[in-house]
Structure formats: structure tokens, C-alpha cells
Amino acid sequence: MEKIEKEILTRSVSLFNRYGLRPVTMDDIAKDLSISKKTLYKYFANKEELVRKGVNESFASISSRMLALLDYKDGNAIDMLFQMDAQICVSIEEHDPSIQFQLERYYPEVSASLEKRKREIIFRLITENIKRGKEEGIYREELNAEIVSFLYYSRARLMLQEESFFEQSKWSITEIMREILIYHIRGIASADGIEYLDYKLKNNS
Image (cartoon, rainbow, N blue to C red; front, side):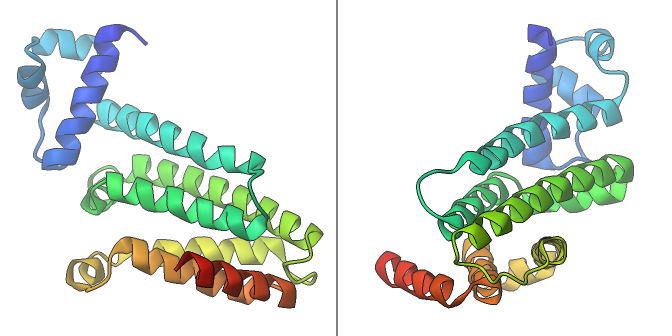
């Protein structure tokens, strides 16, 4: 990617996050960068392409941090889940939730592609986490990894779709996601796993 193309993408993402996807025009982007529209269109055919590449760029950064957890060595499977939760919360706090709703409404194909990749990463992480937890004896042996992965993903996605709930809620997204995580772990943990979770919560409170 050329330097100017990278700069256009970075500034565009900044403008989208600040003002929203719909209001920002190609004219606004060109003006903000002090370049001509001809130069802008040399690198990006239209606004949708700019949005798509901006989304891809942002997601690549998040996904690399998430997938790095597959090599997590500083604790057990439950500790790994807490690290995963922390990464998700950081990514949520870094981005305006309303952008997701605008993406679904105005750029459905980009949104669908993004959601597919999110789901693939979550499924991979949860599946590997369950395998590890079983090997460590802290998850129940009879767990169906595919079903549990689907439940985790669906629960988190449902919560994040409730935009009005977050606007009116007295709890932060971090607090809500943490409760979802604890609820999830208590449902999959063995007796040893629950004992460890209680110890972790008590000592980290």
C-alpha cells in the first residue's frame, strides 16, 4: 500500500469514527487531506470501497491481537478467556457502537463480510479454548465445542445489538461483557474450574 493511500485510509477511518459513515462524503475526505478529488479517486473508486478497506484495516489489527491468544502461556483456559474478554472490551471502547449499526444499514455487504470473519475468529478461539480447558480438567468433558461457541458468539452479539440498552444502561459495556463471561465460564466449568474461577474473582476483585 502506497504512503498516500495509507494516509487517506487512516484519515477516512478517523472521520468516519468522529462523524459517522453516512455524513462524511468524498468531498469532505479530500478537503480534510488537502488533496483533489481526482487524487482521491485514483486510489479509491468510491466511498464504499473506502469504507470496506477501512473496515478491513481496523479488523486486521483487532483480529491479530485476538488470534495471538491461541499461544497464551500465562495461565490456564479460564485465564485465556479473561484475556480474550479484555481484548474484546478494548476493541468495543475504541470504536463507536453506532458505526456498526450504520454499517449494517448503509453497507450491508461490507457488514455481512465483517460479521462472518468475526464469527470465524470467535468460533476458533472458543473451540480451542474448550479443548484446552478439557485437557486441563477445568471444563466439563461432555461439552459440545461447536454449540458452546455458537452460544457465546450469539449472546455477545445480541447484547451489542441492543444500542438503546447501552444508551440507557447504568452499567458500562465492560461490566456487561464481564458478566457474560462469568456466566459463560460457570456454564462450562468442571468443579475444579468453578473453584478456580471463584478464587480468581475473589483475588482480583
